[in-house]
Length: 572
Image 1 (cartoon, rainbow, N blue to C red):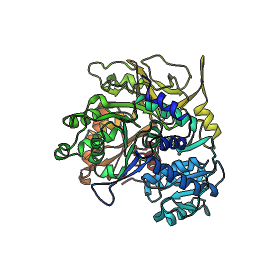
Image 2 (image 1 turned 120 degrees about the horizontal axis):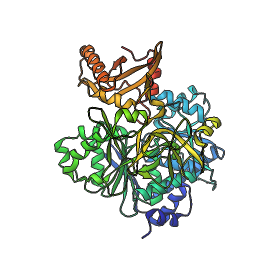
Image 3 (image 1 turned 180 degrees about the vertical axis):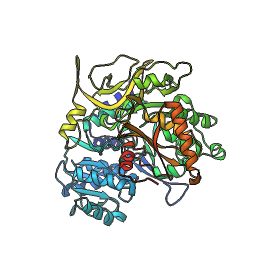
Image 4 (image 1 turned 60 degrees about the vertical axis):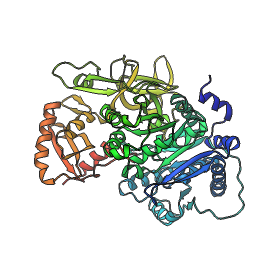
């Protein structure tokens, strides 16, 4: 039997996302396409559904209004809250022959600086927002050097006839990186790369027309959020059910309720979200969940933690959740999103490595009396090629040795917006005897048991006295050293001192922790890190809940933590 991806490709025969929408609107116009569950007015959630025909008409209406205001290829920033309007705005911009820039509204203090940098970089000709935010968006835009760039409300278009010219620009959208290791850069994604990765995802996760439902609370400005919430459903012709990220964070059970209500659900979350959900769901809530219909739980966007997988499945096994549904994956915006994923029908593969050997570059098994590190396999390449390469020599490394992850395939982006030198360095790597070009991901990993194990970020390595240390290992030790330290809220990094590299750790106090315990916590952490890693902690900075800098996708930003520390911000 042919795969869903093959059937879909034969049906649509075109690449742009709005053209996929048009095809499905003609074929199944009265069927549900997009449901948004709004928890702002009612904590129980109010679901609003658009059919394929209704979504297509809304996209047409908005595209007809936007197109005359711009020239083909202009960038248009999406500054809309998570909603059906967000999806319509992205598709309308693309249908109008313009380049979408998925972002978020201003007003989040920790993220406004990044938003301003992105707007200055992409220089949009138009700002799409909602009617309640027009004045704030125009004011924010003016502060970013965009005075005179209008803000157009997508939810309050004036009445009148619409005309839409059929124009397609090569670039579909700019996916700005989260900025976890550098200033945000706009990844240039063409219709071809988006279509390729959506096809890869549909086949990999068996997104099947008539059976699957894509359920997501991930931000639509995030690479995986846009793929799961928009691109993959459009390719396979399956409905999408979306929630706001804030609704998930305040009550994670809402995500599980959406999964329970939609048999055949395919969903995704970063690793921390699985443990977070397990910790914040009550026994009473679990009695009302039916999770036996969940088909796929994609786990990615950061190193996948085996303890998080175990806790999630131990907690929700009583709800019928299958461990085989869990699909650890690896990806990045520069490859559109998806690169590898674990095999269908198999429980996640974990493997223990000797921590010291792993830091030195070899995936040796743990030895008696020495600290081990357990990693989760992120599977095999999905319709693309992956190689592990020595980042200094550029030579491939054998299986079992740590190298930089290089990727080549039709889903790899063409480069960064207006950054030719950086683009050539990141996207233009060559391997002897291997057709390229190759994307240098900056991520480290190794191949073992036929799967990719991601070990960390090349730029995040803590190098003290000539020895490599993975920051997540140090952070794990810190978080488990004392109950007053909040889990998943620490950042370890190195700074340069007079005598060489020094280890600094930023950590949030647990919600009810007493600052009077700080001296005790510091002593305990220093002792634990010294015992486990043979490292001295130069400085431990304890902060309040939510004060450790994160990226817009929720990951700890070690680079921002380091910059803040060096600027002496955030110190008590």
